[in-house]
Amino acid sequence: MSDALDLTDGTRLVIVGAGLAALPEVRDADGRWRRALAGDGVAEALLDVLARGSGQLGNFTVTSWVTRKAFGERAIGVDQTNESVVVGELAVVKWATHLQEGPHPAPRRIAVLRDAGFTGMPTPWGLVTWRSPSGVQTMVASVDEYLPGAVDGWSWAVDLITAAVQTGTVTPFLDAAAAVGTVIAELHGALSGTATVASPSDARRWRGDALDALNVVCALDDVASVRCARARRDEIAAILDDVGAADGTPVLEGHGDLHVGQVLLSGGRFAVTDFDGNPVLTAQERMSPVPAALDVAGMAQSLAHAAIVAAKYAHLDPAMLADVDASGRAAFLGAYAQRLHALGHDELYRPELLRPFRLQQVLREIIYAVRHLPRWGYVADAALPAVLDEGVAR
Ligand code: ADP
Ligand code: MG
Image (cartoon, rainbow, N blue to C red):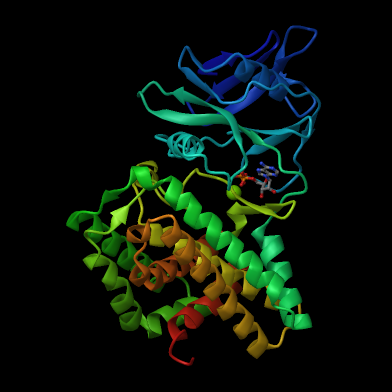
């Protein structure tokens, strides 16, 4: 243990391994501390601490927006990186059991969104950050409103696409895609106060990063997407090259890791979650402001990936699927642009960056699939030629 935040008597949050993990602990009757699980009352105890308001406790900073208590803990029971506990069916406490090295982008982004009155996310109740010995702040716990029955887009988008192709009734999917476009425009509108302008060196860095991803992909083991990237390398490089000329583009403290898996559907409402930034980037890179088009590209491309997933699990007519996929993306992009315009923030979005950023995302997915998740490879295999050929055939 390298640090600890005492919550109530007999519960605490400990930092282990000089900042590798933040773990909830409970003291047993014999006086010994052990790792707490849902039901041990440590998440309830954190809500107790939040109810006392914001404050500094040693190296821990508590930010509290809600003073409501809740009782009764259960594990959220989904496959996740960290560990979340639902308290009283009202709040979700997320322990950062896998600490990201700081600095951490979420606390500021969540605070700005909350202050701007953004409603397209689970209402934040509070969060706890910890200052490491090197003086860097990282997030160790966060608490959000619990959204009953929430499913992410790897469920709702895949299901809606499947139903659209199978039944020919496309409207529910198009409505969902448009609703998400509206929410993302509102997200960007709410973050517009953080906007600055990209410098020529920012644009050069984006171009360098994108071309690096291409080089890495071309050097990977021989799978279909890698062969496609090698065969079409010049064409890909020419598209990516465009971001090098994007200096002057507004950048903001955007989401940074937007995809359908980050958008929950609960009670007919879409909510954006997970402001931790892109896990494939370094801590410093995750803090950098991003063009709005990067978030839009992340979402648009992930809708295409959801269509590929849908095709794998159901026998879908390829022509119908291509139609549903294209019209869903158009509905998302159209609603995004329309809402951004209505909010008076047209200037934030540069649509010419959409294609290069979508392509960069596919390249990153290829790298991730080959290195860590081969069973995801079929998505990248199908996505790369599709994004390259888009607009050519139709
Ligand atoms: P991790 O980053 O550890 O994987 P996430 O924050 O992405 O965790 O959450 C994982 C899953 O937990 C989500 O896909 C969703 O199913 C569920 N979840 C997260 N936040 C909420 C919430 N506020 N209400 C209901 N379910 C949630
Ligand atoms: Mg997530």
